Image (cartoon, rainbow, N blue to C red; front, side):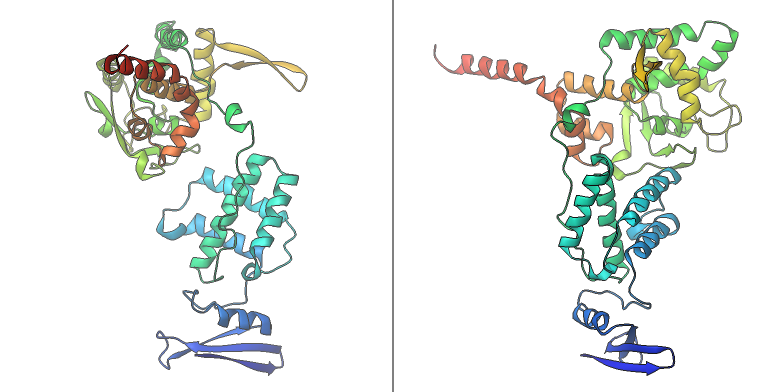
Length: 391
């Protein structure tokens, strides 16, 4: 049972809600609101609120700021706090959320308000940014519901789907077998080019081989400790983010065991004899015993590797011809996945090996490669039919 009482003081008029609460000694708790409408809304949603709000209902911008604060300092729903690079991206999306002219407080939002927000995003931002921002705003509402600020999630079921040609445009670039041989050969050649290169490539060469034969993400092999490297396998348990901060992999699916050929582990343990000892026991640290910067890896290792392998290309950007690499470090991961598909491994195995949390992610990234096997599937069906059916 609850009731609303009007309170008038020198500071103005407020509306006080008295409601049942097992946590209070008297059996009742109280919440005050500046308007009767907010008080009635609170009474109406008492069944869905986990805690009574202790302050005035939040504006949308305030809820977004609180979400960012929770991501940075506490972690959402019992999770760990987000990494600096992820937080930077969340702040970018939060800025977009606060650009919109919200006409209501956070608790007053309805589905139509979220639809209008979605339309505004699509009209004023790129489709990719619009989709990511709407997804994060959904997270804001879910978190505010957990915090007792609002009673429901009006963004549920409202999404932005991929564009008509987006799947085709997002197909990953994968080196051919010959290009992969050229990349590995280039790593071998750079490791013996001269004394300076030999020193640098004593580290980069086993790193390139590991990436090519494991499908690990750059963040994962940059954060790899020696304690997770064995004679025939490597354990993936942690990563180094773009800022060089060591932490656990992003999801439970990222924790996996990957088996390696003897050639790769030989290179790794050969490098171990020269590797700098670090507090984090890193396999590929800098000379200052820190995690290798992804930016420095690209500049000092990846670009020279692509040049040596003959995989530089020229493209026109803002009217100027600029030389760039044909592939990115992630392409080694994609190549490994493509070979698993080529060898006929099932989707579940590929998902687990690549560390994808959802099989939909595997399909979104590599689905076009699986489609390329349709002719082989048709031939298999024809062969089975030829064996079982009379001519």
